[in-house]
Amino acid sequence: QVQLVESGGGLVHSGGSLRLACVAAGFTFSEHAMRWYRQAPGKERTFVARMSMYGEIIDYADSVKGRFTISRDNAKNTLYLQMNNLKPEDTGVYYCKADGYPSWGQGTQVTVSS
Image (cartoon, rainbow, N blue to C red):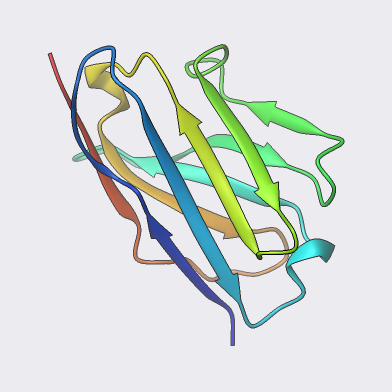
């Protein structure tokens, strides 16, 4: 049973930073690409970033390029998202997801005040 537990969200001022973590269980973490998504209030869930199994391929949504950094520690079954220079439009619930599995975690709330 796939389990994804996100953490690290919070309330920050515009320009601030947060580091999100996603601990995975129930599957072989190192054999799957991982993604971050976010869902703003009243909007659909959208793609934020993706990292391949060993980190050789990384993609970002245009809106976060140059500010967010995705990383992973396969020994710890953990995915990270370092978010710098946060903006109010980054507000939302952030989720991680493993390629090949439909499961979602509970998400972690990020709120950026102006």
